[in-house]
Image 1 (cartoon, helix red, strand yellow):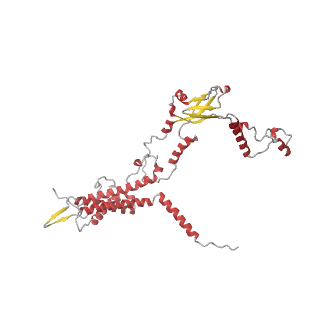
Image 2 (cartoon, rainbow, N blue to C red):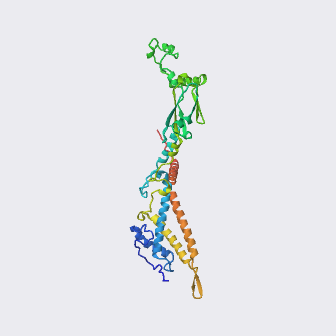
Image 3 (cartoon, rainbow, N blue to C red):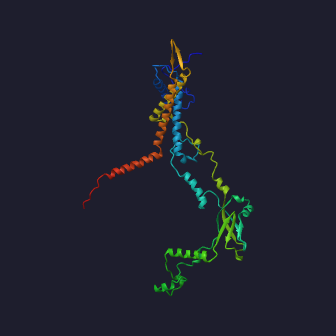
Length: 384
C-alpha cells in the first residue's frame, strides 16, 4: 500500500474540499479554513510531533463545527419562539427573521372556550325544534336526530328555549304613576291631577331589578315555573303543555361533537406544525461574530483531536529498534469527548442566559436594585 501523506505544515483550501460543501462559497469560510487547519495542527503538537491528519480532515471538522453551532443556535430559537411560530408559513427562511411574541395560540384556545360558552368559537351552532303536543311533556332528541340524518350520540344540546316571558314584560311602565301606589306620593309633590301618561316618578335602577326578581320568585314559588330536564337524550318539560300550546314550537340549539373534533385538527401542510419543519437553515458563516467563531475553532480542534485519536488507535504500539512506542489514542479520544461536551454545555448555557425569560428577570432585578439605591438617597427637606 502506498504511503499516505500527513499534515505537511500548510494547506490551501479550494471549494469542494469539504464533504458537504455547505460553506465552500463563503469568502470568510475560505479564508478561515486554512487558518483553522494550521491552528488545530499546532495545538495537536506540530511541528514537534507529526500529526497524522490531512488538510481535508481539518476542513471536515471545521464544516461540522459550524453546522453543530447552527444546530444548537436554531434549536434554542425554536424552543424560545415556537408558540409564536406555530402556524406560520414554512415557505420563508427564518434565519434572519425577528419572531415577535403573539397571541395566536391563545386565540385558538379561546375559540374553544367561546364555543362552549356560546359566545363565538369555530363550531357551528345548529337549531332544531319539537312540535308541542297537549299533555305531552317528554320529547326524544334521538328521534329528532334520526329524522334529520344525525347520529343521536353525535348531538350535544347547548340550549333549550323553554322559558317564561321575561319579567320586564309584566312590569308595565316602571316610570308610570299608576298601579304601584305612587299616586299619593305624586300628589304630595303637587303632580296629581294630570293624565297618567304624563305623570313620571324616577326610581333607582335597583328598584326595577328588585321588582323583576320579585316577579320571577313569585313564578318559582307560587306558580308552575317553566323548566326542563335532559336525561339520556330525552327532554322533559315543566309545566305540562296545555291545549293552548298544541302545535307550538319548542326550539333548541345543539352542536355536533364531530364538528368540535374536526376543529381540533386542520390541514396545514404548508405551515409550521412541529419543531421539525420550522424553516431554519444552516447559518451563514460570514455573519457569525467573533464569539461564535471562537467557539467553532475550539470545537473544530476537539473534532480533529478525536479523529487523530481514532487514527492512532489503529495501532496501539509502534515497534522501534529494541523497544515499542505506545501511542496516545486513549488520551486523545477521552480528552476530545470531554471538550466537546464542555463546549456544548457552555454554548447552551450562554443561550439560556440570553433567553427572553432570563433577560426579563434580569431587567426586573435591575429595576429593584435601582429602586433600592434611590431609597438610600436623602430626602430633601422643604422649608416653606
